[in-house]
Amino acid sequence: MKYDKEKRTFDCEPTLTDSQVLEFCRNGYLILDAVVPDEINQLSCDYLDGKLPANPIYIPEGLTFEDLESFRTTGEPSGIMLEEWFIEHVLLNPQLAGALRSLLGKNVGLPAIISHHRAECPAGPQGWHHDADCVFGPEVNFVEVFYYPQDTPRELGPTEVIPGSHIRRVRVEAGKEELREVPRTPPHFVVWEPTKVVTDAPAGSIIIHHQSVMHRKGPSTVKGLRRMLKHNYWRTVPPERDWIIEPDFDFQTADYWGHGVAKYIAHMFYWLCGKGDDFRIMGGQAWPWHNRNQIGKSYGYGLTEGYRPNWRNNNVDDYAA
Ligand SMILES: [Fe+2]
Image 1 (cartoon, rainbow, N blue to C red):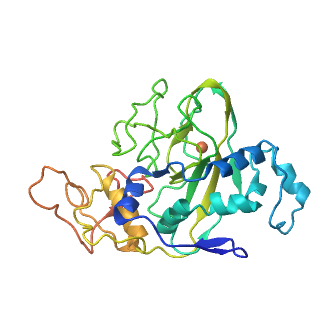
Image 2: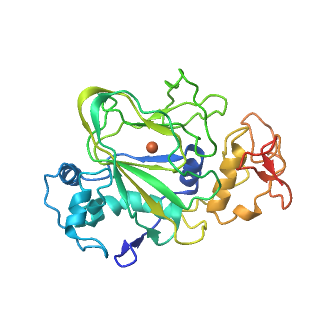
Image 3: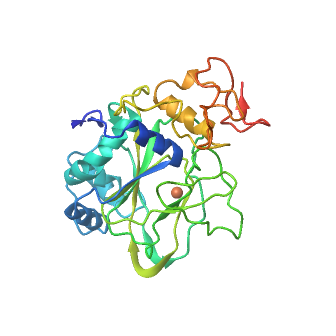
């Protein structure tokens, strides 16, 4: 692990494979169960509850120790990111760092702000939403992570996400917010019926989200306090396929899912490989669409001319010239 304290970046070995990077492109999230040690989870809760004296490794320019202390009880307790134990075990957590390095390339930029989603339970669910200023496009220039410093079973209202909703705005009909739940893996996103995944998880779990994925705080049923920290990591280099390459990974037959979504998922994966500008498709049942019952490979793989997915969603057939 190379941590540059001055630039606030890190570098390390990537840990995700081609298939896992593609899985992130399909789902819009990756769940890392219980990766932060218990004693660090406890320190995080104590810090957020104001029980732990602050000991920042430095005071950022333009701020004072008192400023950092005044952040602590707000929704943005960013001073926690200056605590040595938090930097080492949460921000630079080895499993998290390896996944981020895979998705964001070398010299990943560390968060500048952290949000604390503190909730008194029991409470009803939050409304389904895409986070503010999210963008739909093939680019993965930043990702959002949610860190649960405490056990977050279903009773405490863990975050619920709609798989695949990071590629386009999803509408959840009024009165039908309790979506059908699907297992975390494999996901079963279909464009005509949004489904949900519940991210209940033990203390120390971290969920990496595409920032555009639709989500909500789930309903909670027991009395207690639910703490959750949210922060973003940033790309500082152009994308390239420098994660763990699988020798038998085949771009032609890889699973980008079906109609309505495959072209977007494949485009995102190609962008991450540094080949986003060259991505061209024919449409219909041509590549990247495929179905497991077909007896030959999909047509249209490797085109140099053709259409591109219409991420702006502003024409009739979902293709851009
Ligand atoms: Fe949100």
